[in-house]
Image: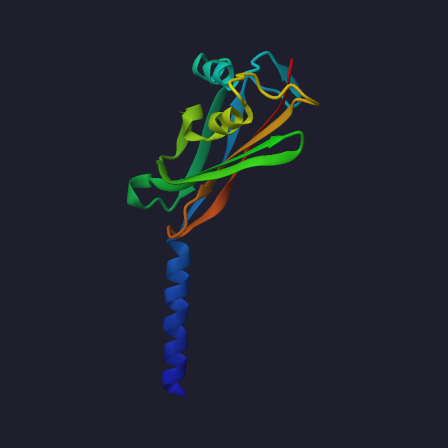
Length: 164
């Protein structure tokens, strides 16, 4: 009975210590220069890529972390979901990207949005699909990578647009 009590106290101590030293993150992604349901002029993936490179649109990431381990670095999986006319055409994830807490710019190349849109173009036509509605939704996500003892989440950014 005495051994059981000692074991339970030791187990409680270990769990409390582990939980108190876990890292917690909170933050958000945002897209500057873009409003929901906006019509854009860029009708090719290359033009959209160039608009990001020229600063017409930019992806910004902000996060805070508590109980910082590993000199503050948190590894995130960068997830991209691309939808065309409400149908998911691409879901990708790039694992283990290191980021430091604070405000920072994220290049469009960190996500797979442009390659996914490029796959929609076919037979040498560089324009995005012209048949039917040209409605697009791109969801950018930062998810803490597994195996880090990190709790919390980052609010995703969504880019909804139609093409002129």
